[in-house]
View 1 (cartoon, helix red, strand yellow):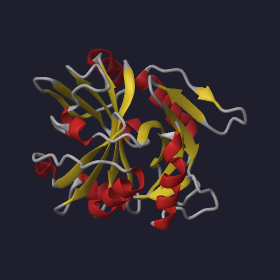
View 2 (cartoon, one colour):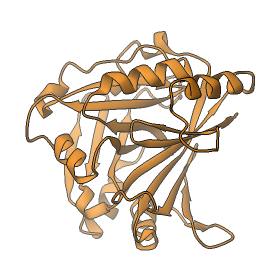
View 3 (cartoon, rainbow, N blue to C red):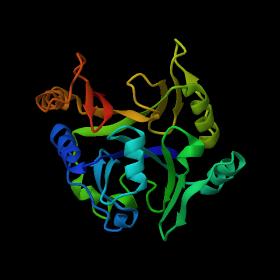
View 4 (cartoon, one colour):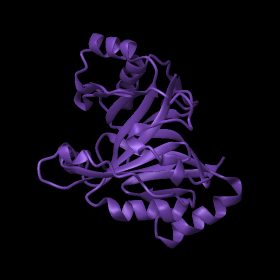
Amino acid sequence: MLRLRQIAFVAHNLDPIEADLQAVFGLGAGFNDPHIDVFGLRNSVIPAGRQFIEIVSPIQENTAGGRYLARRNGDGGYMTIFQCDDHPAVKARADDLGIRRVVDQQGKEYWILQLHPADTGGTFLEIDVQHGGESMDGKWEPAGKSWRDNFTETLVAITAAEIQSPDPGPLAERWSRILNLPLSTSADGSVRSLTVDNATVRFVTATDGRPEGLGGIDVTVRPDDLSAVLARAAQRNLVPTADPSLLHLGGMRIRVSAA
């Protein structure tokens, strides 16, 4: 099993981003991890279908999140978090590739493995194990014990993460080796991608003037809700281009389509 479980944004102030996400997509309340302050951060983890969108924001100087904000010139994507059931194989591949581990911790039910972004490239790559979370409706410790109480139905799924780079080819190859997945190439050869159980990871050339990082996600919504979602996004000035389905929110591109 390998599936996309959570996407993290990093922002100078998480509150307006959380408000936009909740207003546009009808999302419920987020879970605030009471222990994340040890990293100099506060957060909100919001159910997005049966996956999660996290927003983190620095609350003190000289944090990893703050340095990442400076490096990427403002709010944007921070982490791509996967769920697996086989940490030893992932760790063995990372070790063979010389990739350092930022966090490698086994709790009672939740095991976290965060790889060093300087070694993986692209963005923070995290691959976690949740015992008792084999079902998409099951446990997911970062979202708290009661995340299902905040589940809403408008946003169905996060179907893709888009990682941009000045040179996406070698980056895609490296992620392919780390995740042990074959690469696919678009018909015109411009986009390479990996497919996990429930989503796609695309590697694209950076064209927005920002450096390498997590540049966007694709989401699906219920067909009956699509027009209302796009209208709410436009009302909140989140659609800066002629494409009404391409939102710019929290420094990220969010492509919206019907499920």
